[in-house]
Length: 196
Image 1 (cartoon, rainbow, N blue to C red):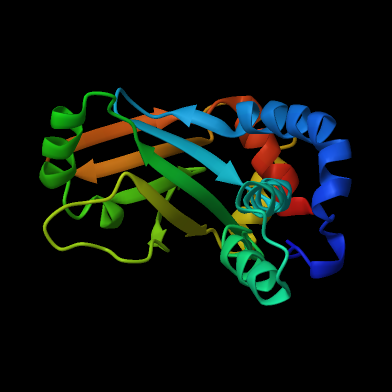
Image 2 (cartoon, rainbow, N blue to C red; image 1 turned 90 degrees about the vertical axis):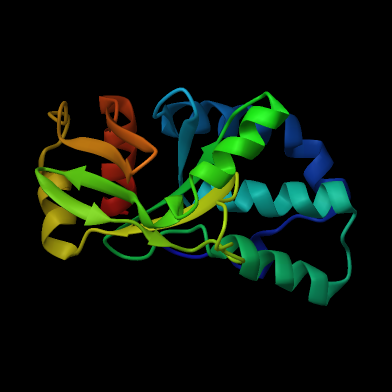
């Protein structure tokens, strides 16, 4: 998948003009890419559009206009864009109660190494892309890549609309075990990403 390039970004004033429409489109897209994995975990599968949105929003929120800072944001969020035959996700540990969340983040130390996808019966270990991994706890936000490989990616794309039961998100941690089917609408979006 092609990375976001500098010439695609709009200036702050231009972005404000198109932001309502862009925001509505991305919210709709993310809705189809978000999966509630369990009571404590959700996942958003990323693509080029979600990365472009994050960059534009950071520039807007932080009022970034300095060229070196813009290039830094592009580099940072381009890490979310999946490579060839790869899927990319942001995983959130979502626990509203602060004391409970803090306790669970300690209990789930090493969570970033316990994530996988099962695609057409093949288990693909997640590759942790989160910076600043802590030894005694996990973080609330994780960036993960799933390198499917060309053959598996092609097999998934070849399924067309018939994707029910083809993909599961796995958490295999001593303190949390989940196997959640990825909804067909999400799998179709991911297959479209793989075929792009």
